[in-house]
Image 1 (cartoon, one colour):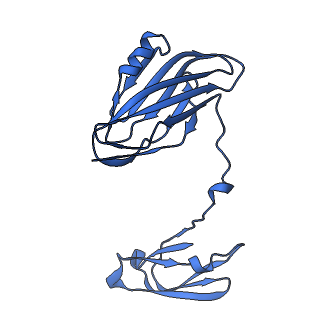
Image 2: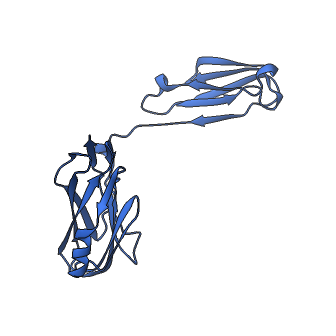
Length: 212
């Protein structure tokens, strides 16, 4: 729990006392000379489970302005999973460490988790900094009609899939070349039906490392 009080706000001169659950905690002295100084009172050590009463008492002239800010931590194991969309995406690399100018193969799987066909599916795949996409494999899958279209930007690869049958999985593979010595994340992936962008699903980020 953090208490942020502006010393001397609106020409306030005097003292601001902070108490928690009826017990004095600290007193902030407000002076004209420090009217533009921000001070923070940290109540973290008193932040135990349950309700607490925080009382501010000002003695002096003028008006004091303050902000009361609270923070809390929730373990990942306690965070409910995001609602899953009709499609699922997973990304796998054949290795995570390589040398500069070497290539790594990336395999993308998109699964239709419904019984109905999904038309015009978009897959957004992050590119880790320091890597470039080799498009030969994508061009081949395009000519084989496995893809209807693809786009490559400096930060992402976007795949356009015309249709995925209900319960089916579509698989795509392409290569990345390391151009710099770097340890970088690809930023993850997401998939969604083109006309239902709010129904997207995510894949976690993967870190790749390239060395000289």
